[in-house]
Amino acid sequence: MENIELFGALQARFEKNMNRHKGLEWTKIQAKLEANPEKLWALNEMERTGGEPDAVGFDETTDEYIFYDCSEESPKGRRSICYDREALESRKEHKPENNALDMAAAMGIELLTEEQYRELQKLGKFDTKSSSWVKTPANIRKLGGAIFCDRRYDTVFVYHNGAECYYAGRGFRGSLRM
Image 1 (cartoon, rainbow, N blue to C red):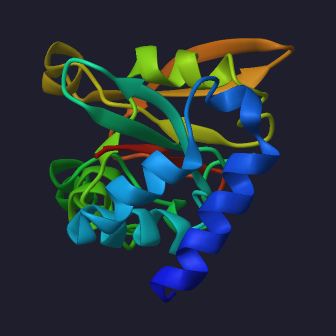
Image 2: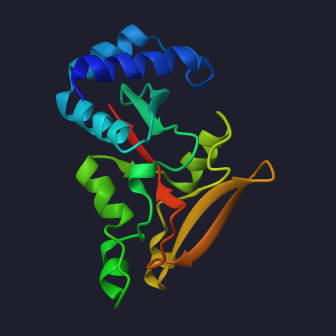
């Protein structure tokens, strides 16, 4: 996607969903985007894989805009994956094609934390039919588990699974600061 197309998609999404970013101005965000081509590439990767990234905040202490994947369901281009490389390598058969942590790193983004996921859910209803891996605390991962979240019954749920598990309806959501 060329920058002009990406800017158009981002601006249209920004203007359509003003509830996600009260007090933010598109012209300032666009200027920041134009000044950070490596971050623009990461946003394009988020868009290309179905994440529909949108600005959800601004950190005044670091002077950074915060973008989250805001697709209604977990991004389609990032599903059917296990949690991390260790989990992928532990599978003897029926291995998924990739894992969430490596994909996020290759895209230049971070997995949402549980806290960020809950913040996202205050902006709309996401993952009502899918689920998303979230950054798993080291003590859980050390024991072989990983956590994921979804929204059912108008409530955000946090679950656990073996990190090697993967499902067609589970992907991951990312965040990017710029």
